[in-house]
Amino acid sequence: MTTNVRTFLREFAAFKAKARRGGTVRIRDKEGEFLFIASGSRHTLLGAARGKISFKEDLVRPTLKLGDWKPSL
Image (cartoon, rainbow, N blue to C red; front, side, top):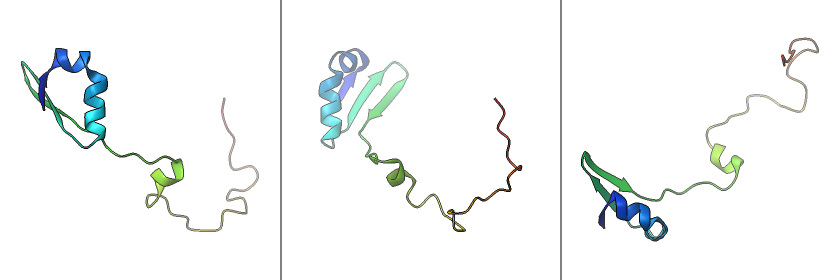
């Protein structure tokens, strides 16, 4: 579906629903064309970090010595 910026802003809820259903909305203005599509997101922080964080050692024990880290406020 193709629309202009004014209509897109007025009927944003309808266009958002269309994008959630898998549709693509093309918004035209004087300088070009923009695509509005929905992207899936993970619901938890752990889910979003899956595959990006790796643990090298056991984290049950402290990793720094007692005086090595001093926070500054």
